[in-house]
Length: 150
Ligand SMILES: [Zn+2]
Image (tube, rainbow, N blue to C red):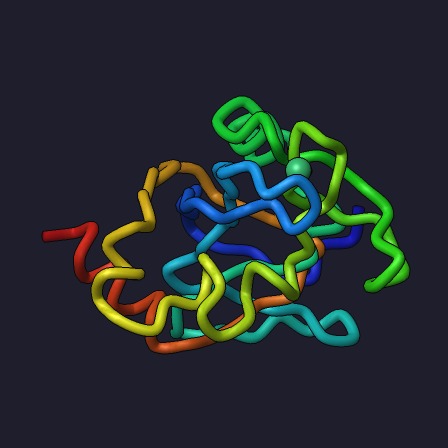
């Protein structure tokens, strides 16, 4: 794996959504980093901001086993929409709940108010993370970190 980002530690987030195929109420999960470095053309640069990781294509073994054991719905699946394989949330009915859907405004991982924010559980993993993924920066991850530290 050639990582595209690395972070000093990370958090496993969990929230709820309704499966868009079978309408079951399911737990969905995502990774968040408090700060990170990103790699572009072999050069690492520091990004001070927190971020939600989306479209995680690969990650180191510690992060992988922590995430997959904590969130059994996470599986490496091919997304027709994204056009590649990433670790996504799969309902028991087999339907992928795509990262785009979960991270769009009003989705479980883009809370619009404090009630939505409160619905997200945060589990910090005190281990460095390296991954091939996209980082989505938004003010709500700062709010979530502030709340989980309180
Ligand atoms: Zn389903």
